[in-house]
Image (cartoon, rainbow, N blue to C red; front, side):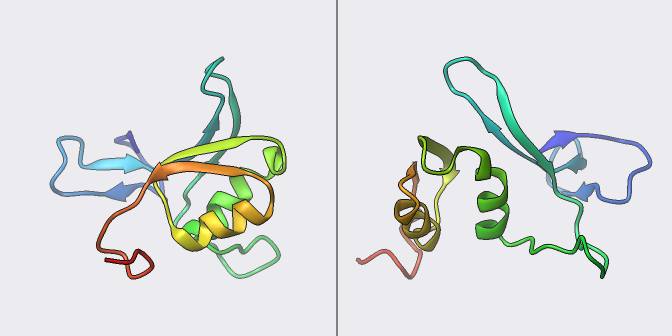
Length: 107
């Protein structure tokens, strides 16, 4: 999330943050060279038409990591178990943390 205060239709309002207006950015960055491989801005709801795509976490991650599937490792702060299974089938390793209150994680 990047702080932003200006005219923009897809900014997010988060009332409990110091910078209340932000733009959500998904980025795929090389951890060694700090090179941005792929970047996507969250636009909110997509309008109907040929460019409409899903905004759920699984779809966004799969779209952003498409250039490196079958080649390496992906790291993200929180992980979804179904997403980890999909990426494992694609021979891509996912490194991240799981929240213990998720239904997929056994007690």
